[in-house]
Length: 467
Ligand code: CAO
Image (cartoon, rainbow, N blue to C red; front, side, top):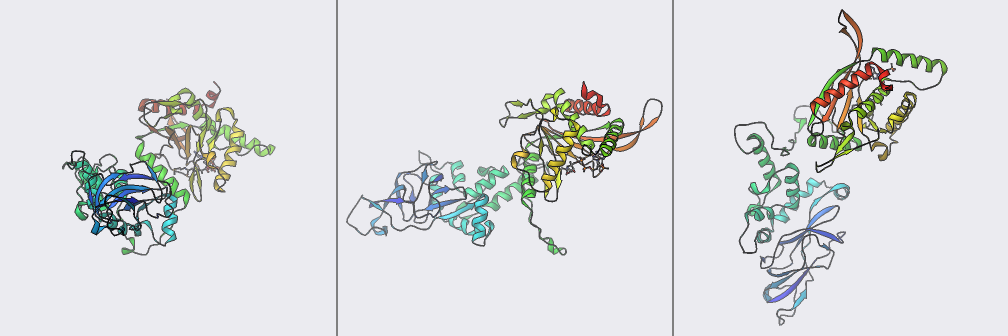
């Protein structure tokens, strides 16, 4: 028997990387090629395999340690005849360096680096997956050993945990799937991505709690992935690549939609007088050549600020832990701008301190900047509440998605002349549809109704903005 020092082999760019998983422990009997640890850089995760078979005598690393090429991972007791790296067969129980190791295998790529890496070899991440699984599944002994507790018994929980690759575990985590409840169909019981998908499908069809009889209800975040469909089977199709804004917006909206319990309150404001005043201002601007065109939106921004002052809870953000509200004492309003590349939301600051003319001018400038792709990330941060105005386009109402960390968003649709009963007769009044979506964790339905009622009152009589 000899004691062999197992070191990290050449792992390319993986210098000073963190160990995210230790797959073996002291006393384990492992085979050559069994995975020992998983390391993760900002681009990918990778398993480090053993170069030899033997029994683990001492672990030299733990989860969270950072390692590079040459770092000692563990001490392995190897049978002399199996010690392919050691030339001197006389020596026993001495530490030798391994000179030859199986190559480490990438498990998953992530982020931008992943894209670069996958593109650089002409493969997508999906392309690399089968090879990855194959490698990992050749390490069942290591995984099984890792599941042993101090008393030598195999913990069911740990066994299951060890029997999925980090990428599968990440996938399961994202879908809210409990790995301990999933049976692995991979080699020697390894849980595969397909197993996770199947489990989620079952949970969905059984009502989300694993019980039959409540179809169609999802188990919390246990949302199954959309199926991949080949639409070309039904006719001609083309694939259009989404641009960066589309992708970022999609991800952001999806996150907000899933995290925030949304409710939308609808209302209408009588803007007949406001519209008359707005037209008058625009006429004056035209005659004098001074001031930019004023649209209803700047009045709505002013009314919104009045609403935030009267109902401060709308001007807050919920701390991620859900323990506290952060109350803001400034009034910055985000405006959703439709651009050829997608939706962006620049923020107009200190709306309470600016005149209608100043806001109109600024709105023109930021909308142009947005459409010319000139907005900086800081131009889109720090909003208290956002407005999504589709008034220039059409529609009667909609349900905007809260622009987190804000707690509410005001949707505005196209104003419309309607017959309104004034107590004696129907009168033609210009009515502006409002759609207020809010985070129900922070705002009660009654407050939302009070808020839109107040907005409606202010917009119906803009003199109230002065009091
Ligand atoms: N009712 C009736 N008419 C309205 C109106 C309303 N609620 N809001 C605007 N209008 C009118 C304006 O007065 C203007 O009319 P004139 O040209 O006759 O003066 C016309 O519609 C066009 O207005 P606009 O859209 O150019 O200007 P705006 O200040 O209302 O909006 C901006 C600016 C940047 C918000 C808008 O251009 C925009 O991009 N809107 C889309 C926002 C969006 O996509 N939201 C959805 C997000 S969720 O996917």
